[in-house]
Image (cartoon, rainbow, N blue to C red; front, side, top):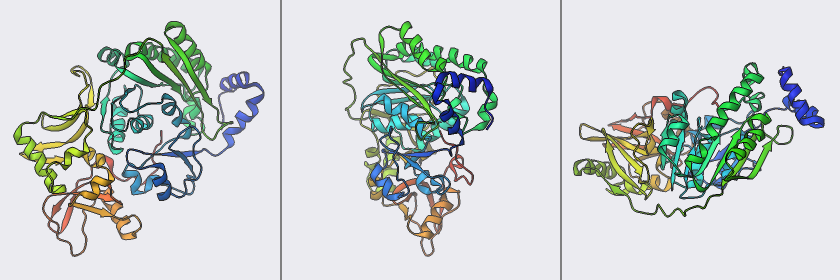
Length: 458
């Protein structure tokens, strides 16, 4: 691997006697990791299902290393059920450092593809509110897909500039993650293509961009709130010096903790993260804990209950899926659960303002993929119209993969009852199908289908 000479000179000056070890780390094989999605499964349960998860990531409570030359977790239906997220181990640090608690209002300002957002969501436990954003339209769509696959309910997904978000949400958030765009020096081993784009001019460009984003944090954060600033680069200008400048500009903040992961010291590509606190007097968060409101007209409400009877033989079971601090409403034929604390969103580029339950078309309800992924294992086990496939049965496992590829489902000798079916693997939902006498018509979204190639990780 040929690294830029100015970069090497810079690292040698920064690391001094550690530089040879740092340089030698580029000859090490990269370390792969994944995190259990505790919205669906505990780390202990996942460890039992994936016994090759032996070594834990020290700085992440639900993270594990795995050998990617021997195992392919992205090829198993469990991946498509959202039981775990494949993530570079160092990237697990920032969300862990932020110490999110249930009922917090949390912002992930530069969120795509969503690995850190999902980590924050797991800590919220579907309480509070998680606002995730990416300024790139293409990346924000990938972000939405990941948010829905992993069963996050208390969500607002945006494709906005940080400045516009600051205008809509003054002093709204208890916790903010700024995983800032950066020169990506910690990506060189994982993605050698990044090397050709590196230059001191690029570093300086990112420094200005990072400073602009950080300057909006005081407006967004509640008094007493906390922010984590992080990058996957080694440049002091983008890390320690950036934090020093912020503290000088905003003296109400203090540095609580700073961690730098170097690839020659840890099993990971490297990361920087700093935890900052706003020392103004805070106001306790007494929101949440109410019951849901239903703002649907009677006709649409009956249609939703009819679907619930189809799946669970119970008109109210669908409402058990939802957190208890929102409102169920209809927007242009889309049935949504939204958090009650959301301010008016007119003027913002919103990709999703809550959990999309489905759409009503010609008086009939069509469930969304997001709804399927929001159903937990216990709720799936209660479903009477559910085709559950067992991962330890080779025929079932192959049928699950065929479903994920978009194929029609048939089972010899079975005539399917009328209506919708939930398809699951070991009672972890994968998606929907609709009966057609001797077969189930596949309703798995085209953009979600099983990928034969490698999955790009965060």
